[in-house]
Image (cartoon, rainbow, N blue to C red; front, top):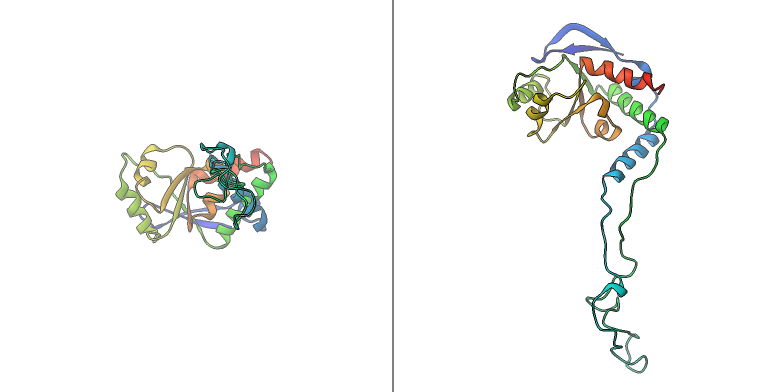
Amino acid sequence: MELAIYNIKGEVTDKKVNLDDSIFGVEPNEHVIWLDVKQYLANQRQGTHKTKERSEIAGSTRKLIRQKGSGGARRGDINSPVLVGGGRVFGPKPRDYSFKLNKKVKALARKSALSLKAKNNGIIVVEDLAFDAPKTKQIVALTKNLQLADKKLLFVLPGQNKNVYLSARNLGKVKVITASEINTYAIMDCASLVMTESSLAVIDNLFNAKGE
């Protein structure tokens, strides 16, 4: 697939770029996309939830009423789960929600997500960004020039760029990552993928170097 390259003014330049079909032109596999997104979200969970069971409640162990003859349910001490303030039955305990996913499955998921974006015209290629200082209005102007001001955007850079990152940090609908950090969740979570010219080469090397 061939795409035009835009400048920071939102104008189409004379340069064009060919997207690698082995990365941006595969048949999307929605199931592996779901698996990769599920793993990403699971890894974000702290898993520190905890409720106290009956044996962990501080209270008397005296039996409150007799076993039979009261007309009500049988009841033990004040820590009983049937009483207000008692322990909780089968409550949550600290646990690890992360799970394993094969590297080839994750690679296919990222390729599928990129291919979906390319198929739906959700990839915009711009010239390399070079900001002299952090200026939020520069990112805002760029999104307006590309007619993407009201959309959720993911900027993909070839490497760390502090000025660009700080310029977009205060914008709720704009996220900046490097090409090596690209993941399925970030791709699917944005409306449009804004990639710099150099970041495409990094992505090509990232997938091809590992034989993915």
